[in-house]
Image (tube, rainbow, N blue to C red; front, side, top):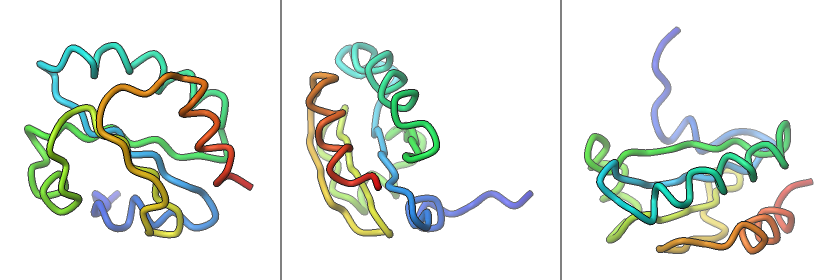
Length: 102
């Protein structure tokens, strides 16, 4: 199977895509890991979650002007519908996603 481009991955038809830009050395990113997994479980089948390491995917990070980690970007039909840098409480993340899942 061919590796999909970032653009193809975020353009998931009918399903929003939450991208978690992170780095292995980032403490808040580690704190967010279980929260992101919980949200992925909560919206299973309705939301795609991608984790993007900014150290190994600098082009994607630069394209979306990711200045710090963690940065979360929610895409719907390839368009950014929400973006936030820094840790996000789980209930807030769920609330934001709920507005965009059908």
